[in-house]
Length: 243
Image 1: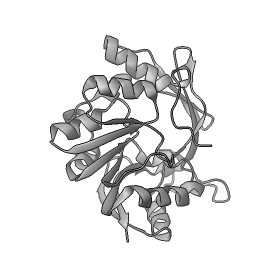
Image 2: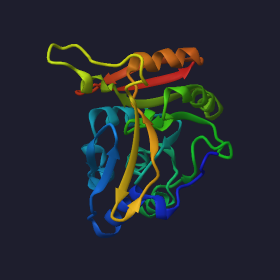
Image 3: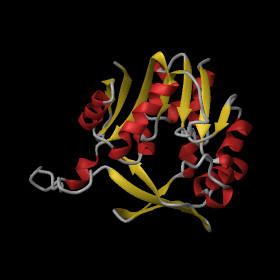
């Protein structure tokens, strides 16, 4: 069953976003995984302006056009930047708290829904997926579901603009080779959980995908890909459209 929204009692990121919006400060937003040491998301970074964004983010916002869907919009930083450019953007976010904050921050159109829920319908020229936008796909086995859903939401000439990263650098040996278990799960499939104060979220799957693998799956499901820009640390921006 696809959850349409995340309730406040299970929404650590939403709580952190609300705290920062209301008080200009926040506690640690902790990120845990069995695969990595505990990490932290700087909450202030979720409120960055266009000038504070990475070159890949800036490029994505500049090339987004037509009716734009900002997927997993969070605090609304990308949507607000697009609005300032005079562009038509709809923010979609599964967190009820985050949606309330986006509205207070001035995002014009906010939808509290899960992208994969069939009750959400629309026709968009650009589907924007940033901050490792491939993450919401979860696992490679969900690629068919993802691309079929994109066909339902894209206009005939529409494009997905997505960023991601290749995690192979985590497996690099001293001699420059990569120690990756090809018989195991794909190395970019990570399982995370988050915690903020005493609010714990449910575990979720998150996908980092290298560009050749993304292109391979896209082609299999009727999409063509274009590498728009590469970052400084195995990250990249890609455009995907129906063949």
